[in-house]
Length: 139
Image 1 (cartoon, rainbow, N blue to C red):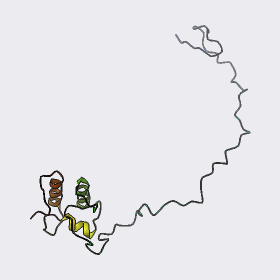
Image 2 (image 1 turned 180 degrees about the vertical axis):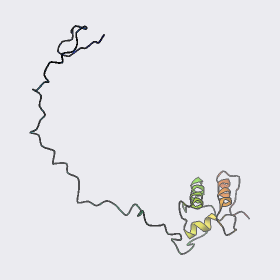
Image 3 (image 1 turned 90 degrees about the vertical axis):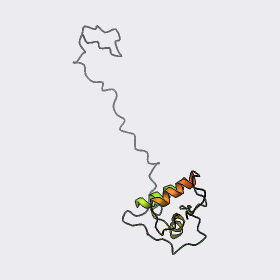
């Protein structure tokens, strides 16, 4: 048994079927006189900031600086004057090919002094962060 309740007749007989012969309500027409809001136009004078994002076709410079510019701080791969987990992340991203390191950062990353930056360097920096190793470079 179908129960149909309409807003006009809430006490409608539940045995009766909905009235399919009734005509649609034509009193409510869409408002065709309203015009679109022209006050909120997109800003066409400003140009997108293209300097903040690299071009999709451009490749990162593999050696962006000429050489070490200061004192080597072993373990400070991201050059923020601290040895922390961010340095481990920076060297791991470099090892995966997801980022590059400046020449100074490369010098700081070679904590085992073997002239290569590899996962051993990352592990030693991590050991320094968690204080298993107390001094870098490893000799």
